[in-house]
Image 1 (cartoon, each protein chain N blue to C red):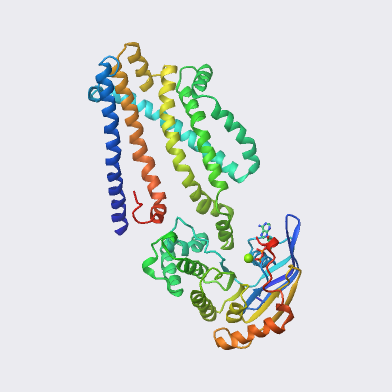
Image 2 (image 1 turned 180 degrees about the horizontal axis):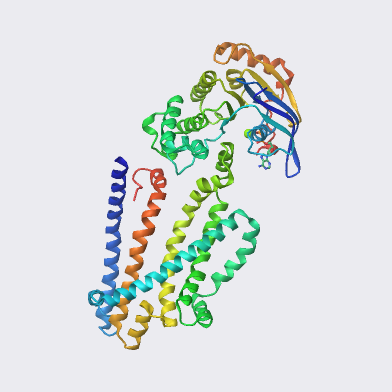
Length: 269
Length: 249
Ligand SMILES: Nc1ncnc2c1ncn2[C@@H]1O[C@H](COP(=O)(O)OP(=O)(O)O)[C@@H](O)[C@H]1O
Ligand SMILES: [Mg+2]
């Protein structure tokens, strides 16, 4: 019972923090409006007109299909990147030899711009879903890999010894200590890689011409439909926000209750 | 059979020998204080005895069923509440959740930890309360052997006495045996039946002294006199307060 009340309280604080976020968005909209008034409808349609265009678009079920298609691709790539990055990161954290081999590879992977991967993937896979998936995987997994590896390496060995003293075998120590510690490093990386998954998905769709929001952006550009393009950008950002705040933040809040407890009075945000 | 028997134990870190030729034995329901200057290898020996470290040489025989352990620092899981920290060994042992809750409560009462604080996180509790959680965590599995590695060094004098009393009291009630590492002779003389002195270079046992009366039945005056005479007249305690900075961990 009290547990649920506490949860309610956490959501309340969360909703409160949403207000400040809304204020920041309003500021952005104001700047946008200034730009619109300076340059006119053709270069930069007003924020209100864009929102109206987006809403009008979403009245059509076909637009939902398109947004869902992109979201599905982004989420699939994000999942693949998280699993691959986390698995390799765990191995690298526990076995320094793996890390020594993987570090330079990660540097190379991070050094190649995503756009180059899209081109390569298009050559290898043609204009298919595979192109989008591979690009996201390559673009998003290195960050997850590095944070998981660092999480494992920075684990508290004294806690490991404590668990061993109470008879915990390696697997039990992994699940009750290391993974729990790694989670703290993992979540910020997940948020960033989810964002890049959406961005890369749209970019890959546009270049590989496989439909989705990216495909629509290509079409609106060809028609010089600025309001349509901006409306699609708005929809892409909205989809990202829904996933981030609906999925990642609630999970993270459950994991980080103890951090909130550790904050001194008055610092709670 | 004795509760714990270490035979010709030797250990080295990265080729540097820190322990050698250690023979050490604890009877059932006996509390043995293990003393020696800082860096002489006490922690290493206890870690070997508790199975955290594999010794390079020698044999460890355990005649008890299960042990608990208290470390110098509380070593609590920062992300878990006091209740979950106390019941962590039960979780390792696969005890069902409802039973864990019940037994954590019992252990908290044993060490006089306020049950109202069981849902707080370690960062919300004072140093003394954290160490109580650590003691409760060691007791929750109902051990018949307890390893204590300088558990109260960081506490102030009054709190230290209270904690020692808890250990003395519970060891008498539950009749468990214990190894109590300390470099504080007063503490050793309060809690132990017998004091074993480790050689200051970790090469064997320098000697041992049995104490009069059972722990908890000694007056402060008597403890003070005993320690004074140890320090003044007894050659095996000569190096007890040496600190070799080079060897500090
Ligand atoms: N994990 C370790 N790696 C290398 N050297 C260690 C390690 N643990 C302890 N030592 C060294 O072993 C010696 C004994 O340490 P320790 O057993 O902690 O002594 P004590 O507990 O008596 O102070 C010290 O010189 C210390 O520096
Ligand atoms: Mg020590």
